[in-house]
Image (tube, rainbow, N blue to C red; front, side):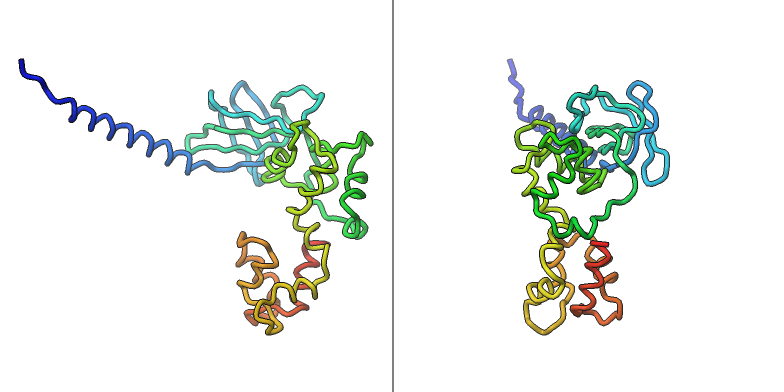
Length: 245
């Protein structure tokens, strides 16, 4: 009896698995992040408002659901809730974060908030006085971002209580731009970021101030009012004012 080698079959199987894995990875890369307000729910079909436009997606059977800080509220997806969703090109949602309703308008810190300590801010935002910040309290008073807020809040909630105690809240503040920037004067930030001490900030030195390269060109153009290609202390002060005011 002639024995056929299994090698060609194994090779073919490996090729098929490789292509399948590549297709899955490509699909994951195509995920679009949507965020905004849920308008309607019909079974697994969810209609939302995203950037002032109506969008519809379907919850994948394997979708990961995150109910952020619902505490005693019933965990359900309903109109009025805010959301963040990872949606593929076929309109399938693979991961969904849902929060209770929060104010829609942009949040700007008050002049008093810019001088407060973490403990003072925590107490101010704690509207029910229970010593903890729910996501709604946090998003109403401290930082409001349907896109980044829910994910960041869950990461900071180390004890998985659904709230932030003061110990969890302090480190969370360090990642909030208005808080971090308000800890120093424009002149102090400028001097600290001016690596070559030439009195102006290049675009690369501006990155030191920003803390990341996200939206670098947009922010630099906004700060460089005289289009000189670098930033004086006055330029930086004006840019900081747009963030804090």
